Image (cartoon, rainbow, N blue to C red; front, side, top):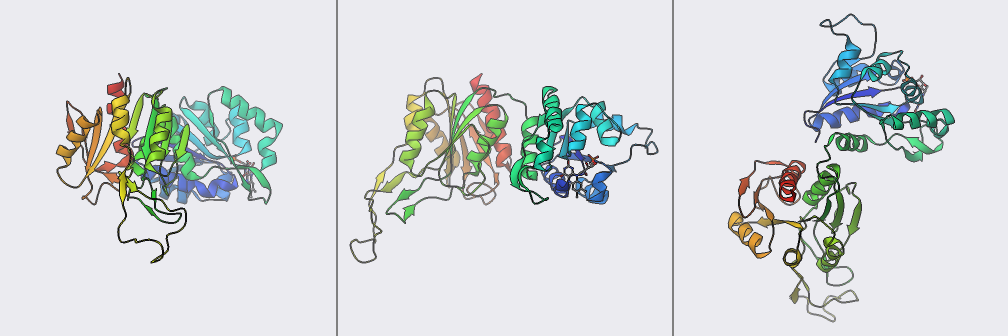
Length: 397
Ligand SMILES: Cc1cc2nc3c(=O)[nH]c(=O)nc-3n(C[C@H](O)[C@H](O)[C@H](O)COP(=O)(O)O)c2cc1C
C-alpha cells in the first residue's frame, strides 16, 4: 500500500517524460507523498510547474541553489525518500548512475541515497540494446537496482521495437510491489473471484452482479505480499492482476474442478467468487427459438456443487476463507455459513448498502471467526484485502 510512502520521482529527458505527471497523479491518489527532481533536459519537454502542481511540492532542477532552511538539498532529498523512481530513465542517467557520475541534482541524489531505486527505461530500441547501455543495466541490477521492462510498440521515433516506457499505472503498480513487505512469502493461495455463468443455449446464460473486484484485490495484495497466487476467475471486465497463475472459467462446475486441481497443495483458499448456486437443467446445443421448439416461460433448474462446503469438508492444513453477501440478518447468516461449511473465517457484507458490495470500489464488512467479530469501517476493497490477509497470516502461524 502506498499510503504515507515517500516517493522521489526522478524525471529525465526522454520523450516519455510527458507521461510522468500521470505517475505523480496516480501516486498521490493512492496516498503517497511525491517530490520531483527533473534534469535540465526534461525542462525542454515539460515545465517544472506541471510537476509542482501534480506533486503539490517544490520541484528540484538546479544543483546550486541558495540553501533553503540551511538544508543541503541533495542530501536531504536522498534521506527523505523510501524509494527513488526514475521514469523515464534515459540512456544518459542509466550510464551516469552505473558509473558513479554525479554532475547534476538527480545523479547526485542517486549517489547520496541508501534508498531502493527503481528505473523505468524509455528510449529507442537501438539505444536500449546498445552494448554500453546493456552493460550499465547489468551493473545496476547487480547492485540491487530494480530495472523495469519496456514495452514493444511503435516508438515516438517511428521505429517499431522495445524501449517504450511502461504505462504510469504499471509503474505505480511496481512501486507498490517494491514497497510492500513480503510477509506471505512462499505461501500458496488459491483465490476465486467474479461470477459464474450458466448457459441455457449458445447465446443465453444466467449469471449475477459480481464484478470480481474483491477477489482481484485479494489476489493483487497477496501476490505483492509474496504469496504464490492462483486466481480462478469467472468472466469479468476488470484488469487482471499480476499473479503466478490465472485461470479463466465459466460455470460453477468449471470453478469446482479448477479449485480441485490446486487445493491439496495450497495453504489458503479464499472463496471471493459468487458462483451460481443453480444452473438450467437442460442445455440446448442450438439457439432456442421463440415459440418454436420450447416453452421459455419457465426454466427448470438444478443445483450446482457447493464449492466452499465441499473443500471445507476436505481441508487438512488449509485455511478456508469465505464471503457472505446477504441482504438481511447479515451476521446471523454469516455465522451459520461459517459453521456449516467448516470455514476458518468469513467476510460478511450487506449487499443493500450502496457504498459496499457488488461492483463498488469500497466495502463495509465484518470479519467473523468462531472466536471473534470485527466490524470494519468503510474502506477500499484493496484496504479490506489487506485486513483479511493480516488475519489469514495470524491463522497461518
Ligand atoms: C526529441 C528528443 C527525444 C529524446 N528522447 C529520448 C529518449 O526517449 N530516451 C533517451 O534516453 N534519450 C532521449 N533523448 C536524448 C536525451 O534528451 C539526451 O541524451 C539528454 O542528454 C538526456 O539528459 P538527462 O539524462 O540529463 O535528462 C531525446 C532527445 C530529444 C531531442
